[in-house]
Length: 264
Image (tube, rainbow, N blue to C red; front, side, top):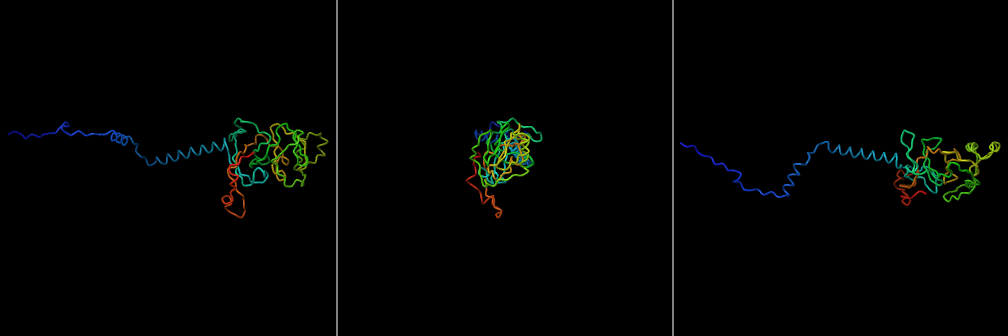
C-alpha cells in the first residue's frame, strides 16, 4: 500500500505583500527607539539643574551681582528700595578665596558710581560716587568740592541741610594726608563742609555720597583701597517704596518708572 502524500506550499506560492516607504520608516523607528528607563527623567533633571547652578554661580562671581540700596546716602541718583545690577568685570572680578583679581577692562574713574566693601567693616557693601583717584588733591569749601585747585561742578549732588555744618573726632584721620606742614596739621579742625586739602594715596580712592548732607563717606572714615572695589552698578532692575506698615510693600508699592533706569 502506498503512503499518502502531503502537499506543502512554498513561499513562491504565497501572495506578494507590498510595503510602502512610510511603513518601512515607521518600522525602523520603532526598532531603533531607545527603551525608557525609570531614572532617565531624574538624570535629565539633575543635569539641567547642575548646568543652571553652574551658570548662576559663574555670572554671580565673575559677571554681575544684585545689590539693594538700604540708605538714602545716594538720594537723587539712587533711592532706598532700588535693586541694582553691578558689573563686576569692568574693574576686574575677584577670584573667590584667592585674593587675586581678573584683568580689569578699565580702572575706576572720577564720577563713577561704585560698589565697594566698607573699609571699617568689609562684611558690608557701600555704594558711593568716586570723586578722587590716586594723586588728586581734594578739599571742600562751604560744601563745594575742590579737586586739584578747581571747583567741581557736581550736578548730581543733593543738599538737604547745607547750613548745618559740624566737626568731630571722626575727621581727624585727614591730618596724616594734609598738604600743609606738620605745625598746620595740629591746628587743623575739619568739618563736614570744610576740610582739606588732602592728597589721595596710591591704590586708594576718595568717595562721597550724592546726598552730600546725609552720607557716611570718605570724609568720616578715610580712603577706599582699590582691593575693596567690587564693581560698577549700571541699571535699576527693580524698585519699590518701602513702607513699614505694609507687609507686601515690595509688591504693592513698585516704582514702575524706575525699572530699567540707567545709573550715571
